[in-house]
Length: 384
Image (tube, rainbow, N blue to C red; front, side, top):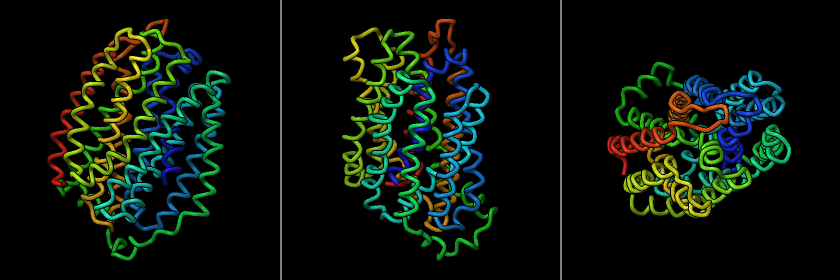
């Protein structure tokens, strides 16, 4: 499951740091770039909504295999895209199938791991995010620099084919949720339950909001660091490498702390501490590059603590027989809010003919405000 997470998270993440390659290549501005980033998320939102009505009627493995195959096809089309519009279409296809993957991974882990140990399990699972940052994103950026921007997508497809074979061979059939009455739950019951239960509504709003606050500043990190602060394309991949290494180290620690001291407490601590680097990154002075790596390392580490504890808390607000539907619906809301964050960022910031980014500090204050509100929303989950 961590390998599955690695590839589909890398496919989503790799678009964001490619901004300083795609903007001059297609001669597009910051707004157009934000739209192609958001295309994946909005497509995944649509699929997640539709899937939430049916996924609990099928073997988890069957849904995962179907979604992953389509995801690889969409990613291959991204690698082959010769124009901006075709790239946009390919991102939509990848998002339509990618929307199935994340929710299935979380549902499988939640089905098989007791809540008392789920924080630790989520820590291992989220290590995929760390590896995507520390290995995948820098490698993708180096491939783009030495070959072209198509190369990172070919890399993802090659790795994905290996993972796809492993899914088919090693992932067992998971049908336990089919034996607890899920087939008696229809579409209207699913919707009614999700929107009528306060904790489930709060969980979805919290999941979406935390993603919006986090991803609002990410698409323009690379262009801002290169065109505004003055760092080179050889230096900026180190941001993701150091940040990813921090999350690898902190991931398991956060999971253990959450299981021992409570998910909510650790979520609040890591969330509040993450506000400091957000404001520093988006108002970055022209420091030596080694100094710049410190706030990024701290930010990645704190954001990882938020994510691990949030996923564990959210998985607990729903019963196993409806967990697949809820997690699909919740994942789709995350995609909607993430896509909305990209679009909102594209409306707020703008770039000139030299691709310098303006109004980036405004995004930082908005991001920090959203994260702060999420701390209050977490208290409504009534999960320890």
